[in-house]
Amino acid sequence: MDLSARLFVVRTCIRLSIRHILPLLLSAPVLLLAQAGNQSNLQLDTGEHIFKSACIACHGPYGKGTPKTIAGFEPPDSFPDFTRCDQTTPEPNVAWQDVITHGGPSRGFSQIMPAFGDALNPEQISKVIKYMRGFCRERGWARGELNLPRALVTEKAYPEDEVVISSAGNARGVAGFSNDVIHEQRFGVKNQIEIDVPVNFMNQNHVWHGGVGDTTLGIKREMFSSLRSGSILSLQGSVIVPTGNRTHGLGTGTTTFETFAAFDQLFPTNTFVQFQMGADLPRHTDISPQALFWRTAVGQSFAADHGLGRLWSPMVEFLADRDLTTGAKTNWDVLPQMQVTISRRQHVKADLGVRTPVSNTAARPVQLMFYILWDWQDGKLTEGW
Ligand code: HEC
Image 1 (tube, helix red, strand yellow):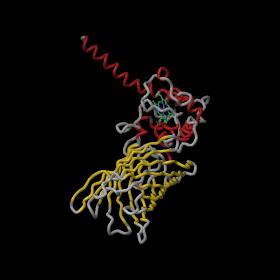
Image 2 (cartoon, protein in one colour):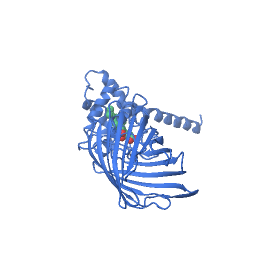
Image 3 (cartoon, rainbow, N blue to C red):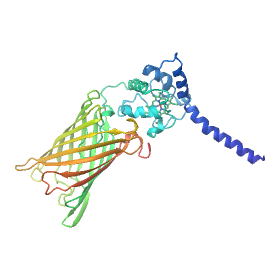
Image 4 (cartoon, helix red, strand yellow):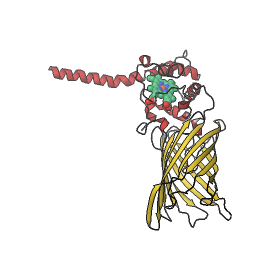
């Protein structure tokens, strides 16, 4: 064999051995654990025992992570610090269960996080999750389980970090469609700001007008939440600024104060109900009347892969609003829809539905509604697929 052929063989051997040894090295904790699980002297019966036997080498004794000189790997940007309540409390248990059972790639995370599904049974995985929940020491953070699937219209109670782009197009009646770019961001333990910029297109007497609508600036505060009872209550106050052109039908032409309460209830069967009720109080009631609204979303989540995989959430919304003027009638709409998680990490979701008026139907169109949602705390748009 000449030199170049020999080099080729050596290089191939090295490449092959890296490809084969790296996964072996990474799965070493799992193999050791599986072996140890068979020996009676190693206890894996409490969450603490499991964590200290199987997880501590990478995640450190307090869940903050082991320095990379000891752990031997370059931690990914998303490497968790389990003492950071702002990062861990939004994650529901099933997300962790999925990663621990099937390994990091199951949710689009690094393959350095091994799969423990063969070494630990579901009960042991639940125990270690319960133990890891103790690393967050601050109380009062609402748990991510209460972050219910977002409906198309009804606002939820959970304070979230999301960007939503939603569209509604008239399927019948006057031609027109509106889009909303909504940015929501948490601050502190219980608060969230919301900015909603609509971009509307209306056909008035066969002429299209397009432009920015009235912009909403809001602050939401969670008042109560309990994972045990599955309930969460929030209040929001907003100012709707008249940035839209009134003469073209894009805005109301007056500043409006909006206030609402949102109450969500999750049942153990993953059935949920979300209520929102509030009032719009314009400054100039001569050009835009005061109004009340109440909204309900009822739905059910189904997850593939024994509850760990893609989440489908069919819902129906019942929407009502009424102007506070004499003789005004209540507008009722129904809005069946389906929300689904798109990315493996479940941080990108889409929802599609049809909104149909059931009262005062003459002047109100049937609308096709859609949104795409990005939970940006969980990763970049390009990550987690
Ligand atoms: C070989 C090192 C290693 C071991 C051992 C290990 N992990 Fe991990 N784990 C990681 C890395 C690295 C990540 C981050 C992956 C990423 O962000 O891309 C991670 C992520 C996680 C996450 C995801 C958190 C999130 O952001 O959603 C959970 C949960 C977790 N590990 C639990 C465990 C448990 C429980 C054990 C023990 C049974 C364990 N890990 C053992 C390296 C390890």
